[in-house]
Amino acid sequence: MRLAITLILGTFLTSCIALPALDLRSQDSPTSLTTAPEAEGEPLRIWIPYVGQGDGTLFQLPYGKTLLIDAGPPAAGKNALLPLLRKLGISRIDALVITHYDLDHLGGVPSLLAGEDGAMGTGDDIAVSLAYDRGGVPWDNSPGYGDYLAALEQGETSRHTLAAGDALDLDPGVKIHCVAANGAVGDETKILGQIDLSVPAYAGKENGASVALLFEYANFRYLTAGDLTGGGMTDGFITPDVETLVGKLVGQVDVMHVNHHGSLSSSNENFVKATKPKAVFIQAGKDNPYNHPASAVVERWQAVGGKIYSTKGEMAFSLESKGNSFEIKAVQESH
Ligand SMILES: [Zn+2]
View (cartoon, rainbow, N blue to C red):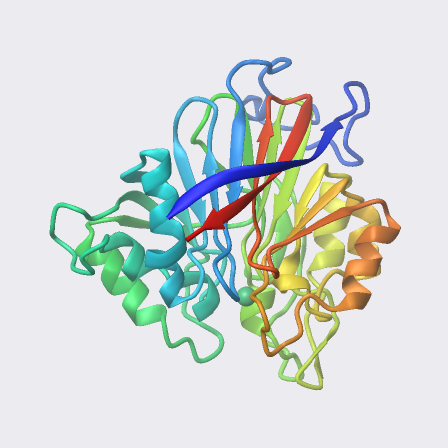
């Protein structure tokens, strides 16, 4: 498989003077929240491959560490993520974050870790140093959860729980804040609120429990939150609205990885208007049975100026930022 960059889709300048609507680095913050000065060194690179119907995003941090957020459905580990890692010359992932326990987010972990030969404990394994997830146990039936835990154990990966208010200390230049997990929303200074996911009437509890991460690299801000819900309907039932609190906490971002593949359960008006991104990534599979992304959701993001980059047409993208601007490219896979 050959990967070729085909088209530069957009270059954006982030505002050098505007502060986010909610400055996570207020004076109440611990000093560890101080963002590095105007970054113009090595870039932050984000890879959004085509993983089918699911999420999986690879981050190459400026100081060299590698972070994978979700690993797509089972086939994606070997078919999408492994080729990407090989192309980039990566055989060790420093940190894996699983946003929640649905199969389209953690299903790819075993086949990724096992490498090309499909067996762990052989020379072609992908090693993972640390794994982070929301802890606890799945809310819903999660067919891939046991295999995920087994793969981590076999790979001797240590597993850690992420909570709202935690920070991932992976890179001196990029601050990675966990702003939501298990329905709690907050930053390093305070918990803004806690949505009670146990309310019997709620559908999509597992999605609502998703981990949300805010990346800050100098003036560049990126938000990703798995299948986090916003009070929309799913299977005829209402979902917990965690998004509104996250939007209130985080404020404006430059780039959004859209929640729940563009489902109507997510991307509520409050969240969209608060975050107002310039660019929006949507990971959704070709001909997926859920009709993701919903056209109404796409229109909501476009209405606030978000340019849509959807993988649905078997597209893949890369983003590069040195902290004051960012550039998105389409990456076409030639078989
Ligand atoms: Zn999903």
